Length: 258
Image (cartoon, rainbow, N blue to C red; front, side):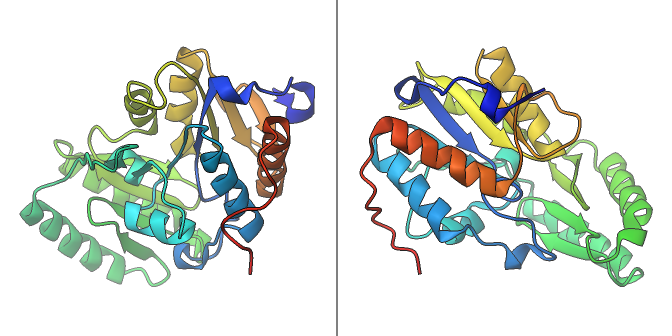
């Protein structure tokens, strides 16, 4: 893999940019609700969007959480690994499980998790996440539990491992598929996709971007389908700033850092 410094600068007017959030735009925190996007990075994203460059965020988080993290900026976005998607016109296109099935799965997961203090169940409305960051000794317990539910509900659920989490998401939800969907629509169509992500959940996105002859960029260490690297979340912020400088976008953001 090549370091970001070995790569030629992109030609921004020909590219469409897709960003993961946790571990890419924002540092991972002990609990999901503690995550925040640094004000300078948020301002840089606003400037990129205001400069007329196609940009979207793609995350395991629900859309409502993404909007809260990015506020007041609202971008085209895909939440829950593509189970929820808002296109550039604001239209919502969602995958969803039957409400009765969701309630049944939630009850069963809550009962199972109650037997393992330290295992945190997150209900994402259309998916579920088993977090073990605060209890790493429960990794195999979480894995076994998630695999069991994925097998029992295989017609509607699929398992997505991540950093200190196992997620149960609607079948068909994929960051790769959602990038392909965006690339069929304005203002992304006709551009070359660039995707930055850090986790196992982003590998499908990297593969899709590679197949489209785009730029796949892994944040941090570890094996990956990505063809380029940046070192850290802080380096992502610097990468966006370099992009803005190349574009000549004015330095005064509409979003003012605190």
